Length: 346
Image 1: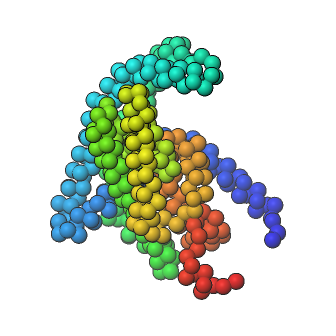
Image 2 (image 1 turned 90 degrees about the vertical axis):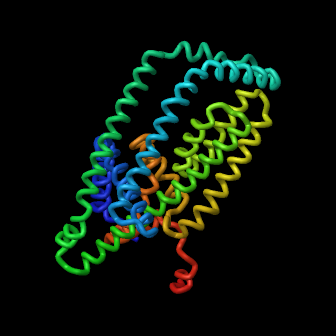
Image 3 (image 1 turned 180 degrees about the horizontal axis):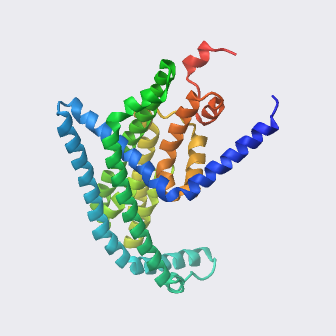
């Protein structure tokens, strides 16, 4: 294999230009990416409701209403329990300090850190300003997403005609249509399965915390719902309600029950249920998923963690249909099916 230095230079310059564009254009590209995902979810939900016999218009209205109710429920939980969690933060810090002191004394590692002094030395005013700015940015991003979704819904009926006019020959139009349908199917399937798994995790978290009388069960259920969307991160998220129960009760019993129960459920959902439901729809290697989470997290922050897998899956499908980028799809893709390997022996 020979390497062309000019081609490598072109690839390097193009990659740096794309990287700079992604980083600089983050305020515009992140809301647009979320809008495309929300648009895909609306279409998938509408088609699902239409299969049950609902008229197309009624299915659209029902889909919008369901998503609006979900957003309202999330806002209610954040607006009520999040404030209570912030009010109880000093109490939890004191309990965490006592717990750390007892363990450090048992292990003979020295005095425990004073968490209250640590937080008091921080720039509280600056932190409040950052939180306020983040809240303002969140409202602005949400407004942009809603506007983008509205225009996508208004434009989607013209997309087939535009796709037909974009390519002159029938073969290119067919290939482009197959690529768009494959991306839509993969993204919709992935989001549907993730939403289903996240809802199960949130319901189980709320039920278990309510039975054990752990405070703020609704808030931690919402946190688990959001974290389960991020591969590998949701598994570590079960430690948060377990730690809260440990600080609340001061014993390891409830914390172990929560960690084992939710951890086992997450393992089954992520490794068994998602595999059965998705099959080979999301044909990405585990290494590609980890690398995509790292890359998009560095470029777009927390939003990049939620968008990493759908974007990487869509990029893999595009590379499969673009001559010269097939190698990139092979690198990102999962293992080749056994029946395909038997048909093409080496």
